[in-house]
Image 1 (cartoon, rainbow, N blue to C red):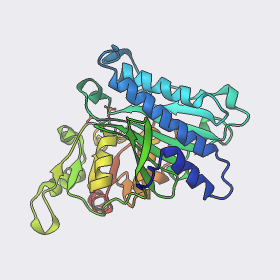
Image 2 (cartoon, helix red, strand yellow; image 1 turned 180 degrees about the horizontal axis):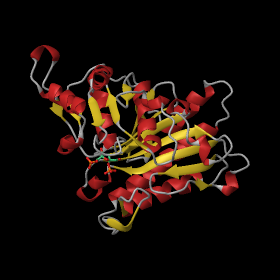
Image 3 (cartoon, rainbow, N blue to C red; image 1 turned 90 degrees about the horizontal axis):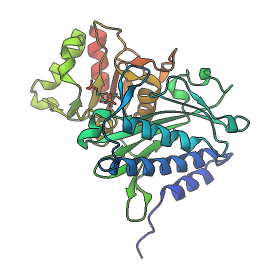
Length: 330
Ligand code: FDP
């Protein structure tokens, strides 16, 4: 007889049983995130005929255009956390202020941060998209609970909406990958304890913005493109306009994703510390990779405001260390 597939809920319950002192609340939250992933996948699949493609006619707190599906996915996630006494506070890149779930105030042990629809320029062209989430302990129930270094995250992960729908997460003891089996409507375990290759052959960066980068960043990217058989160069360009999709590729194949600071601008880069960089950094580190600002480990950064941005270099150890060495040389 073939072994029974391991569903997401079975996997999470087994993990919970093997961690002494666990209350089961985090397990419940992860199972619920699985349901949210299926709902967002359904909304994406039906967007072409339910008139949810295109702009919502509004902009988020950063002044970026909101797509209708950004708003739909944001609402689905808020509904996911709004009951059952698990989550006190939720913040997302689409909302100016965090939402406090009044009904959960007494018992909710967690705060959740998320980017509901990452890579939203891909929505209207049926490109790959993702949702990123970060789970933290609730402390005093205020925004200060969220402005903490990334290494304090309890769990983090993402959904990937590509040819298949994937759910990837870590609770700080390895990274596990699940694939949605649409025929039964369940996520099934496809890889336990994912390990990222120490070195890759690909890089992802929006090179159209090279004129905004510091000379050290341009030198690094030029280095990757300069042929040298012995060290596997030139690298291949693999930029999809979705951070989750590119980071997922490198999680499996090795390589580096970069969104550098705009050297002439704020010096902060584009990506948000709390909704994008911290959660993906935890996943990648747990798989043996690295995430750096060029000068600092991403997980050690504590932002001073909710929507703060940072430069990001994330991927295999060899490429991220090399990036840091280029930045250090200046
Ligand atoms: P988007 O704004 O479309 O949601 O999260 C930010 C992000 O996408 C990343 O997913 C993506 O890698 C990057 O920004 C794309 O930005 P550029 O258009 O500047 O390349």
